[in-house]
Length: 133
Image 1 (cartoon, helix red, strand yellow):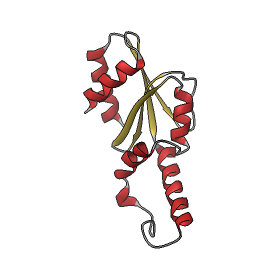
Image 2: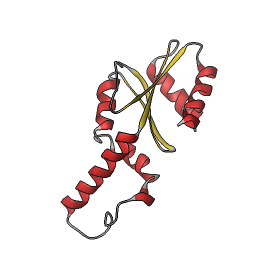
Image 3: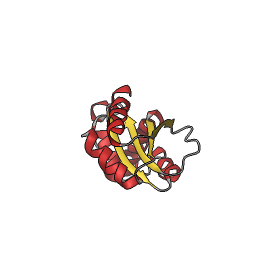
């Protein structure tokens, strides 16, 4: 994860004087309130912001995140799909398999939360997102 975390830190050094980066995981979200989040799974990541970070990240950790976020994180894992995942079978079975894959992926994901004293969350999110591209 050092690669993305290093990029985030470099971006923040150019954007704001005082910033806080916290590393959490789905098992222990800790005491977080608002800010920018980066969910990292392997070399793939999803970035966003929220006024209720704990609730938003809990949704990600449960696999109940927006479809675009799931697809972006899963794209890097398509080579590792379990046997029969894309094969024939009932819809409920395939959905169950996909749910298990998402839960496994999210249980191993790392999460960075970021705050900057001189910017509101939305502004920080936009600038950080553009810097990470």
